[in-house]
Amino acid sequence: MVGQGVLRECLLDREIVGVLAVGRSPIGRQHEKLREIVQDDVADLASVEDSLRGYDACFFCLGVSSAGMKEADYRRVTYDLTLAVARTLARLNPGMTFLYVSGTGTDSTEHGRVMWARVKGETENALLRLPFKAAYMFRPGFIQPLHGITSKTRLYRALYAFSGPLIPLIKIIAPRWLTTTEQVGRAMIRVGKRGSPKRFLENHDINELAALDAG
Image (cartoon, rainbow, N blue to C red; front, side, top):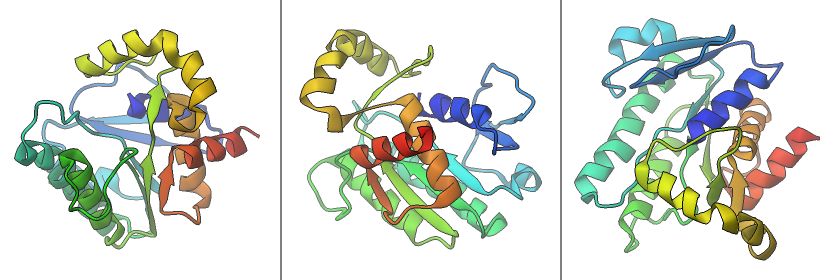
């Protein structure tokens, strides 16, 4: 869902001249700026390395819900896959900026009780040690999908269908915890272009950056 929002904003941004989308299934859209690689095993990019060179930034939006998953399985997707892709990109593009979509509540100590937060924290810390030009960890809270964007996760679709009528109330009582797919996309693009003094960007940071970009 976040990936769809980031892609939309990239294609709308006049300064971005080209976008390469890498995923396990076709996006289902065409654009003059968009190229696509469909790869069954995204963790193994050896066969497409030549196509990955020359890019300024990677917006890494791939993820999975931890609901019902054992830690080993969740770690395989969240940590192992992410680091496999990141290590390849760092080797091919040392001048690249890497932007990772994590989540509010991520545990940077790696020792907390919440499984997903520990694994996300370990993933963030490992990414920050790689030899990129810069790396940033985005930690959005509740994300409102806009512009017809929907989640591929059934649980999340049900959650958004249920919570949709509550969004105006959330905006009033807890605006710092709410963002949108559009705001996340704009904020990531701004940081990809201009950087940020913060390596860890919480929900309120994301919304502030998106507002600057809109201005």
